[in-house]
Image (tube, rainbow, N blue to C red; front, side, top):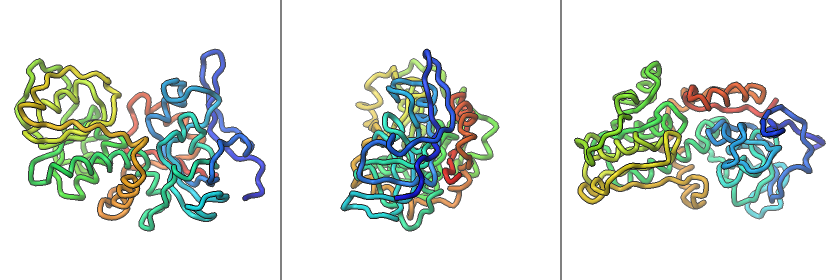
Length: 332
């Protein structure tokens, strides 16, 4: 395996209801059971990681804990018939970083069913720029594009500067769609145009509650990452036979709607669950993300940090002040 007795990990601890984090040396026998032991080269910061790091019991029940729902690295020990030592693999979703110690540690041990081989056309860093956010974006685009084609009209993307939103925009642009981006960050208009948005809509102009059951059709489809009133107004503004995917609830998990958009315009609302997405579809999406959907602006959505910078970035994420993707280099 290796000659080390410990490895570094970003460890979150609880004391009297307060949560704090430090970089600790962890013994290997603290790792979860699993068929493959992986040396992590990169991880990435996701909203679930920020919640886990701040003591959200809906994400992580027990502490101390190592967050990190994304990891990519090299297998150093394998009891699997599917993977061998030196294979490069991606692990995203499932229970990684939630109640199983995650990618903010230099090593993880996981079941073989959680891993996907790193596609040949992706570097490890690129895989983590994509990560769970990109997988979620990819699944959303796949489900949307099964029905809505580029010629049908523009696609609106909410939470546009976030990980899922920004990667969705880049993928949609790559395959020929026109995109309207909804954001609360007026200062990021140039960033959104650069990654592929054709129009930028400021959130205050779109999040006022609207009592009318239907609004004038403006979009052929949508990828929503925030929920709440914005999702309500998106659904009301979709053209007949349009498709809306939803994957987040940072604004609100509640919707105040009538059935009219669905029965009068034939709109479909598709929930996206990347955490437990079936492996055969997961592999298909990763293959697309590494080939047809790989974008020239991929690295432009990314900031690279080290473990000791995580606290600062987690704080910014919880305040809604991060843009794009934050990748954590673990080789320190």
